[in-house]
Amino acid sequence: MEAVFPYVPLEERGWRMAMGLRPLDVAKWLEVDAKREAELELKRRLLDASYDVVVATNPEGDDASRELLDEVRANLATHHPGLATEVSAGDHPVVAASRLVQEDLCVLVRSDAWRLQAASVCFPSRWSLVTKIGTTLDDIHRPIPFYDDQLASPTNSFFDRLRPERSFWRLNWTLIDNAALHQPTMKRNPLQSDLSRWFFRVERQTLRRLARSGGVVFTIHNYVASAKEMCELHEDFGALLLRSLDSTPGPMQDYKGWRGVADELRTALSDADVRRRQ
Ligand code: HEM
Image 1 (cartoon, rainbow, N blue to C red):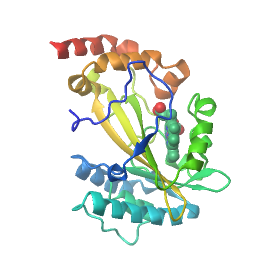
Image 2 (image 1 turned 60 degrees about the vertical axis):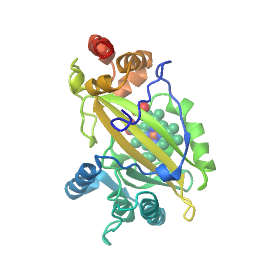
Image 3 (image 1 turned 90 degrees about the vertical axis):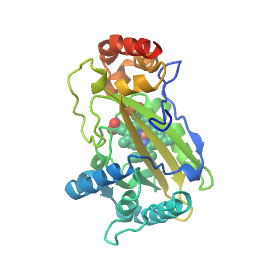
Image 4 (image 1 turned 90 degrees about the horizontal axis):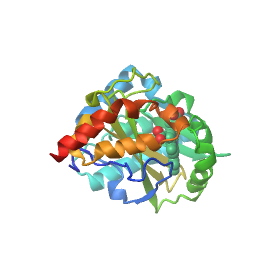
């Protein structure tokens, strides 16, 4: 099962807001799986057709982006030998780096605060890169209920304390009504109860401080499978998902687009767990 869907961050105790940072082994910084070729091809197409949607850079991010590209190439050469590391000289370094890996890449640089200064994000989960470039961690996260009270301060101090020798990773998940990796807008479909048309989407995120430039690199690797597939793969997925949806506070349900979803899916998710046990 692991190879099919590597992360299922649903907890018995239900939904909660947390930083959830864990130490990262840099050998596992960049993940490579069977979807690599298809995802790199999709990136190429998006970079050709919608460059200004998927890339945003300020000059303040150039130096850290060059260091990021060196780090990506060195990491691939060491931990994934055999994968291509050639780049085209015309690309901005954050784009060149992004073409080599399945991850989306964001570069933050400290000035008055930590600001997003370069990014290649082909696979956003309903947010727009162009509205975030140049802004601070607090402003990036402004739409998120409870973030300001609960996560803003620990996240800012985490960034200040992050050191090149100790990197971290975390998981974020959502349930979404569209399987596409590239979703730069908030468009939602009407509620419906078919498990094959709801998708469990997990973001594996990593955070690393760059030794030379002092910038921070934030990577996002997306994993998506339908709720139907997840019920087949993972014991008690239906019960765990229902518990998470039911225990999510109202404002967060609205932000995530989950209002009414648990009730719509309750019967289908319970039946799927029962079928799996038979
Ligand atoms: C320790 C570091 C971080 C923490 C704890 C954190 C936490 C969160 C949380 C809880 C959410 C709500 C997502 C959800 O549950 O659906 C979120 C969304 C988001 N985060 Fe972060 N985050 C971190 C770092 C970053 C960084 C470095 C970026 C840089 C690009 C970033 C960009 C975003 C964006 C764009 C969203 C969606 C915002 C929107 O809907 O407009 N995060 N983050």
